[in-house]
Length: 279
Length: 342
Image 1 (cartoon, rainbow over the protein chains, first blue to last red):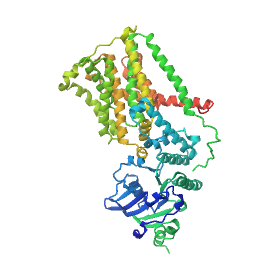
Image 2: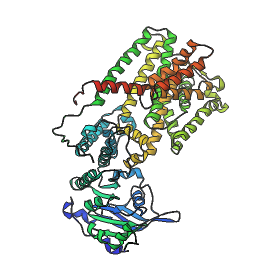
Image 3: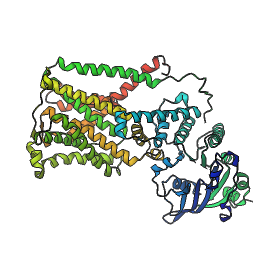
Image 4: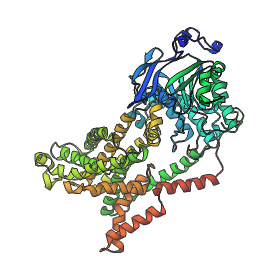
């Protein structure tokens, strides 16, 4: 396990970083995270850093522990040991509903739309954490509530334009094409105004062209909106083409970390993906 | 990803379909309010009383709709909150001499707290299990009201008789007419509140929880808090309806608030359309008038006729009046030329 050596990571694509001085502190630190379900170790001492302005691809064969790690990051699971730091502070004491407010957004592997709401309202829910109102002032339409709504509408309109959702904005999510729904959910996650965006197998169910489009979108989000991305994905081409760094898991352990080319050349990674019996 | 070329700067503004629908519904709503305001001028006192009860049940169903239709939580026990509201009004008026108008906010507040507190443990329950727990609440309520410890306030099995208020400021209205208008104004205010709520950040959070609780949490929605608040607000609406009911009927007794009341409210909700707020009025009308209509057909078989009417309605409009209106609005909307954005 080459874990120890890889703690200090040279920045790839450092020119894309919005502020250089913050680059010294990793945005996200996974520190020796283990998860056990009963007697089964789903994750075993995983550590890596994610720096601002990067796209980090997390890959591994089925059952490698990607989803378990993802669920730890979105606070659905709590690690048995280890810590997860966001901007230097542990997130393990936070409820899942309090991740958005510190700037961690996520999308879902299979769609998780608010299906009876319009695309616009779905994105508005994404902006939930960006204003504070209470039910009484909402029910009475008090002035500060209306001001907050106008501000949210501004955020939502911008995202609708950014993700080319204008023609479907006022239609209910139920019944829209799959690709459109995925884009709408991306808009919803961006409405959080995330510093870190967790993407859970975003290529699932998309065709070849749509995956190409998704790759360009991920890079645009990183470059234009200064969003750091953690990408959990099966689709090798997508991960290798958009990631600045790649972490490979197998059987709950990190077997490799580095830039896409280096990881692809790693014999252990090749073995994990193609089986050890390979000639 | 769908590569649609759609430059926002040059593309046509999208057709505001929701806008058309709302506009048409807005005019319909205005017409309904005008008719409701004019009705008591032409009707006998008993019919006015029935219309008042229709509005009162509509308020109760509106509350239930916020919980079930908007937040996706079931309740077969809203009769219990109706009872709490009714007794709050009766006790405050008869034991403490409070003016009837002030009993409404008091009933609303007490029911909000009761609903919120009931909602907290109910957070662990979903769907039919929650329905069962609320059913327990409805079954327990009449017994609870008969408790001898509470008899000095509740009057035990005898209940409490309330004096009927007169129209204030020397208005030339009968007591029934006055109570009708009083109820209508309260109903409109509460409807306005509910509609605002649904269209707001809080309302969207409630609907997000209904549609996908996991995703709602990831968007920063505190599911537990919102679900408990939904229970509280819903109970407050139903409690205010109960208070109005007590004032209008001039009497509260434990056996007016049996499980049958909770079922009636639930039926009204489904007939009016789950998730469609104006459906509450249809539901209220159903609760008050359909048993009478059933009796007109055949006095001996009224229950059976009522059942058949209910079955037919659900077959013909499986999504309630709300679903029917939506279908008609969609149909009309497709035929009308899309109006440009404001």
